[in-house]
Image (cartoon, rainbow over all chains, first blue to last red; front, top):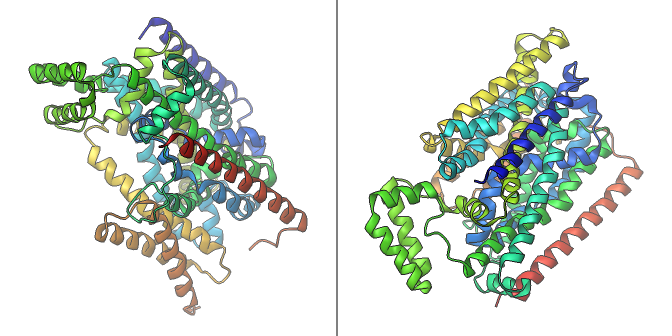
Length: 524
Length: 40
């Protein structure tokens, strides 16, 4: 990459760390560190909520998906606006009124300590691992593209984020998120404009090219339990997933607990309701336009440069032959690319995951100097936003739901603040280690992700149960275990069922079992 | 359980619900138009 691009990247990272640390002034007690003394304006919280969800996977993987699969992924978010409105009326006033630090703290007040501890533990387990996965996805791509050791890529993303999160707490996380969101949207818009300039036909004709290849097909109204992206799975399964994510996941709950008032907390969620789908459309549109761009320019046979190097070294003649065929017979491009991918899998022993390299390769090969640096900085920014929010919430849950609850309930604020910073550093190091070894932990990460989808809907079920007046602690605890078990059994017995439906199954089981068990008369 | 929300809150929520759903419908219509116009 051109040195000027690196100046942009390093300059931005330095500014962000300085900005984050400067926001730590006044963070002298844990309410300030974890909840910014409940003083943040709605628009900053709203941007932070959106920034936490927009990880580097969105910038690299989702744009790549737009290029290879088109716009239909957007259906995944169709349930989000409805979920935001439901949460605005139900959980937001509930949790704000309860004056809690974590969503799980509320569960002890409503049910019992074991339900709180189990849900908090499940959060720590899944988020701790997913934080590693969030760093590893762009780190692996950067390593392949720039030829770096994976540890350097992890450090480039992880160290700045851990630094400002550890020092500044939620204030630093929120205000840095605001700045980073501006960078990300600017970079995406700049790439769209550059693409429209570089594609040698009018925007209207470019969209016709994309449409002819099926890349602008947004809606699939078929009702299928096995198809991940349909209108109905997005609307129904997506609503449950978003309710679970925004309503019960501490990384999101903590954002709106830091707002000035209940109304400001609601408004911050509604910002996602208004803007999430248009933002995702913009992300996918980048990918669609990159697809159109490569209809007029010869794309690399393999976008993953590490895989390309490996195949060239191991099978030089076969690869040269495939390159010759693409050059001389452009009509065979798709079939030749499929053969190149198969060759790469045979040589490297793993799938090339080429979709994740489409955008980075386009950015480095075709964007003007400076703009490429801006986009790479935006990818790092997206990864940092996601992990800083996660680290802050992991630290909060560790300290509030475990350390203060079970180890040192009576310690001073200064002590808790010190432990909170240590917990942030611990989770940062943990996530970096997971990210560094993610390549060799591939199947383990998959297991953890799958495990996470087993209990997401079930945790939502516990919070729904909390709103049923007759529900009791025994029903909530057993219902939670039953919900996870049923989802586990369904995923084994019918593995073709799309994971979005797990959220519906899990939540429904918990509410049903919880209500039935709550009818059993108490011995006391 | 918390007390029932006051009438002001209910009205504000109703207005918000209508606005969010209106924006959602307009967004979906625009996406539909994109698909309908450019997909043969």
